[in-house]
Length: 208
Image 1 (cartoon, rainbow, N blue to C red):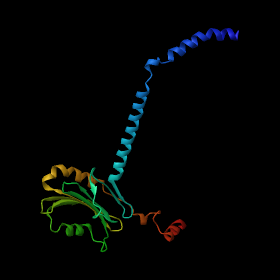
Image 2 (image 1 turned 90 degrees about the vertical axis):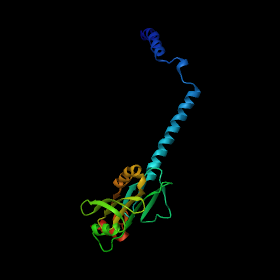
Image 3 (image 1 turned 135 degrees about the horizontal axis):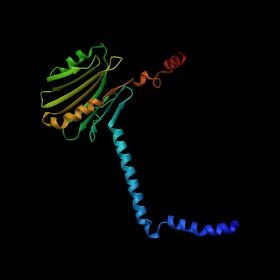
Image 4 (image 1 turned 120 degrees about the horizontal axis):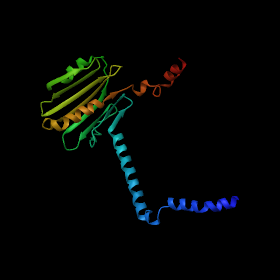
């Protein structure tokens, strides 16, 4: 009886199988498969390049405890950069950004530091945001506008971001400057983290 039942089902199974099978003519050709594979590979490479470009635009100084996102297409001025910060330029446009850490030996207030930095500049205008942040603008008297942000770290040191661009190109650069200054962040420098602590300090920390 089982054989008879199976035999009776075979036409139905064959019909279902035929219904699920795709006609040979609808299957992609080798050329189409190769083109799809190439397109997928190109898309993956483009996505990786985009990710790499974004990563390259994010400058992080772990030793000094700050980071900033730089404009796309700008190039690093290796001669002007050092362990305390970085200089990037917009090729051929006369605009640049300088982001540097500096020690504050006398533990001066941000107000005094801003006053000293403003000497020689024209049209200085800005605001203090609490005791540890200042944002402002000025003109260097030579046809350039300056956008400035200062952040005071817990140890008293200062991180300064200065964006300089031609006054005649204000409409082009003002938004870029604001976005860059917004991206400036400060955090604990490596020497003050568990990973960067000296062996003695690390031992003391683990023993507490």
